[in-house]
Length: 297
Image 1: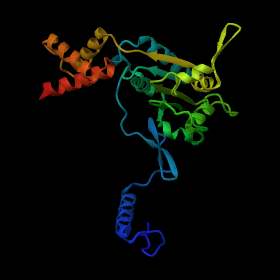
Image 2: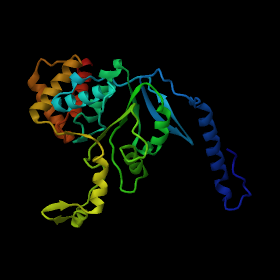
Image 3: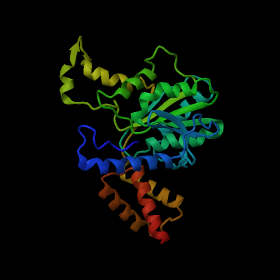
Image 4: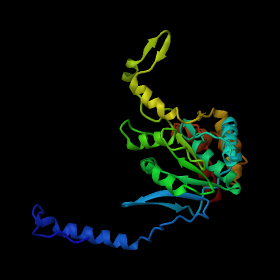
């Protein structure tokens, strides 16, 4: 990047040195970055989609979060349904894209990662895509065309604004395109919203009764239409106090710090949850890590 011309119209002379320093810094950063591979390392088990400048790439994940299905408590029905659906997909049988929605920290994302770890020996591959990059779905599909592997496309914390371009791209992938669905790709997404987009009270004013049946207004129908294209909906709910405490002690055992004074640990765990305003698996995991770290000290 060339430094700005001091004589260029519209460039105040006082900021020319600052712009020159910025240009020099950007050149140094660009020179220090390793070149991105043109072809993915297909031997890798997991990838993430990364866009840099005008190019986008599937980059291998060097180390995947190691979490297992047995570590996820009180979501047995959700686990069973997603395991069955994934087995169908890996077996070449019909399977549904899945939306995992509900309260924060209740195991939605952890279940997808644990599921991948469970089926990884059977050849399942994972691709994580950020919500903002969903507009690149046609490029990702083109990359995967003709591959023999089975890929799970994972999008965490999925949510849209009404005018989001990636909203339309995802609708097209989910049974809205003239192209046949990719047989080697399945989408699992997590969200705190069931309908993925914000809903406002004013939108319900367009609803009406027709022969005793409730018909939503066009704006509501548009929002429902996206989540409706996921064939499998799995809901997640906050833990009760007993479930939260059992999860705390589970993670304590996993971290090798099962406390001799369980009453003191229980009191501390409840105070931790009260400060966080949440009794969830994530809160239990965070407390157990804090407790274990202090114990090891």
